[in-house]
Amino acid sequence: MQPIFSPTRTMSLLEQMATFTQRRQDILAGNIANVSTPGYKTRDLPVDSFQAAIQKAISQQSPKNSSLADQLYPQLKKPVSLEEIFQPELFQPQERKPDNFTFQDAGNRNIEQEVMEMSKNSLLQASAIELLVAQMKARVPL
Image (cartoon, rainbow, N blue to C red; front, top):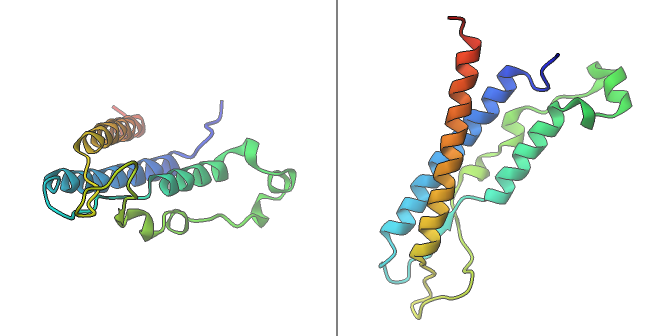
């Protein structure tokens, strides 16, 4: 049975995910630290854009998503590098749009939302690191 993804590409994707979640954890912690700062506007990384980049990177590796021409003539298909997919903008914080309410000082702080986002992000980060460690163990013979 042949693997669907190359181990090198898989590790690179997991590294991108670990980097993204670490950067996001720092930003979410900053939001919590500034929860009582008047006028503070919460920031976040573009999670939807990052997920789309992951899906794009995975779809390029999946043989079932390639066309017949790509399967017959793989040398003609120009591979897209991870640097092209994971643009630096994905790792730059952006002001988060307020969900439901803003304060009189125009801030949009919400401690419950920040803690929830931080918890979800922490689980995603732990999963990425666990998979990365498993990949490394699989590559190193005992």
